[in-house]
Image (cartoon, rainbow, N blue to C red):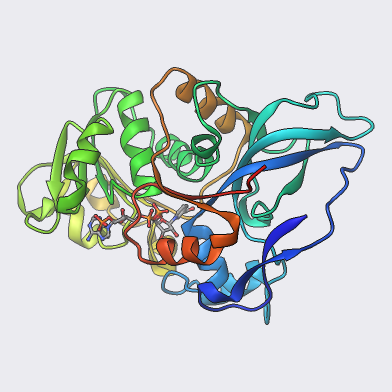
Length: 324
Ligand SMILES: NC(=O)c1ccc[n+]([C@@H]2O[C@H](COP(=O)([O-])OP(=O)(O)OC[C@H]3O[C@@H](n4cnc5c(N)ncnc54)[C@H](OP(=O)(O)O)[C@@H]3O)[C@@H](O)[C@H]2O)c1
């Protein structure tokens, strides 16, 4: 099969399409013929080892000390079941599924095996393969953070970085949960973020949301420039700061930061749960979460896809298709 492979850390050009052995499903696995996969900021970090401040060593521990342990990137996919293992009963050949590979990656390939009890679910029928391939990365991140932040109906949520993969999921999921949503994005994306469901949109190139006197129950920071010191005046009593992107110090200090003001800071890696995948599929099926797609590239343009992600300017998710 064809797969996008990298054997050393570096710029987008370290990734190349190669022929590699097609995997065979173990007894408890299914084999998925991959139709689409996202190239995420997770792939960018694993390829370049550009980690948030203080996480450099963790990057090497997670992805491989001197060279990548997993040569095929790709955290999430959509596709069709091509074969099932001897004891696998949950899925049948021909079913459309989406799956989250997470840190184990391996989705930038024509085929991938997934345990039948793994992070995989049937594809919502109203989504394209490209959209379904982009359900999990931002969606699972934000379901987890909103759960940890105990978001409740009617609360005011501000999403910093509302046009990215995680931010666009945050806007739509916060709306789904009944929040009043303010999105912060660049001028070119104001209409887009409004179309995702944000009630209010702030253009960060002309306005500073922390200088407007408004307060929020939940602030989501996907950009890394809205730490507690900057946003504490913008958090209402009992407010929570969800640090999707922060440094190691933010993570260490999160349990104690803001306590004197009755604020909570929630940081750290997203959790991945099968219940969340099912919940995302249900929300998508109801038409309340449609993953935002930036550009779609064929697998043989994987380098261009990585370059696009590396700009930090993508709108939603960059997708590669396998041409099946
Ligand atoms: N904690 C976790 O487990 C976890 C999980 C997933 C992702 N992450 C991290 O979260 C970060 C975001 O991921 P992503 O995939 O959503 O990235 P992305 O798709 O590249 O989105 C980044 C967004 O930030 C916006 N942006 C840049 N500067 C901004 C500013 N000053 N104010 C407001 N918006 C600004 C950009 O929009 P413009 O073009 O308008 O500037 C862009 O849409 C990444 O660093 C990733 O590593 C963490």
